[in-house]
Amino acid sequence: MTGWSIAEAARVLLAAEDAGAARGPITAEWPGLDVRTAYAVQDEALRLRLARGEKLIGIKLGLTSRPQQERMGVDRPVLAWLTDAMVLPAADPLPRLIHPRAEPEIVFVLGERLAGPGVTAAVAMGAVDRIHGGIEVIDSRYQDFRFAAPDTIADNASSSVFRVGPVGVAPSGLDLSLQACLLEVDGAIVDSATGAAVLGHPGEALALAANTLAERGLALEAGWIVLTGGLTEAVPVEAGSRIAAHFTDLGSVTVSG
Ligand code: OOG
Ligand code: MG
Image (cartoon, rainbow, N blue to C red; front, side, top):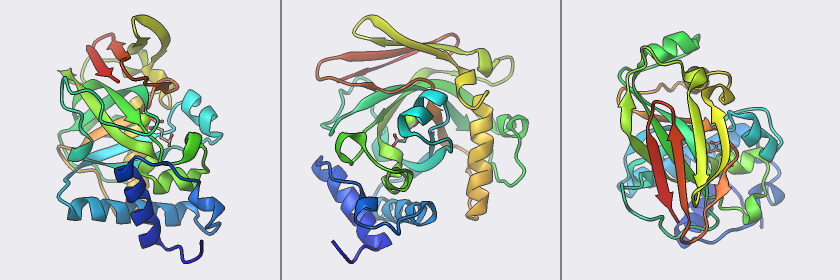
């Protein structure tokens, strides 16, 4: 196909999401889709989401841990937008998705605005009001989760839905590097990690988000939710299966397929 543009890519990817239909990577048809252009696609898709009534509620980081980076063969984290339509209400099963995969994440709720550049992890943690455990369900709009980095950036980093656990803890007195997480699928522990899996400390991911957004003249706003990235590799969610993430101090979160 010819005639690719930022607007067309955003429209095509949102349509694929709405239809629950996977497609081939856009970079195969539009080699000019580089990382910078891909973020412009992401921003255009956000504009379309807001125009249809969704509200911007935060940001997700992806590819912040080694298992996630190895899956993609990249070493650079990505950012993407979160809207209220992506919140999976407590007790709701998953909506119909293409090929959902679940991953445990440490989640921040910001008490203050956080703007780069020059934000360190320590400064970033000062803006955090509460820390929660969460599960993000990713769902790429590309067949078999096969894509290059600009493809997934354009695709809002495979966002679909996420659930934030009910236990919120103040940052003081919590060593997030040592915060352990067990990932359970249908009663069996299939993986585990500590917060150190995310760039050594999830606060580093928050600082990276603030500094990266600053390059685009943007900041993190008070009240925003920040998903800091999967601690482990994401696991496929089969129909009828139950995925749980259990954290040392951040409680447990469950998602049912
Ligand atoms: C990138 C998003 C991965 C995470 O937590 O690392 C992610 C992708 O798979 O498209 O959400
Ligand atoms: Mg994630």
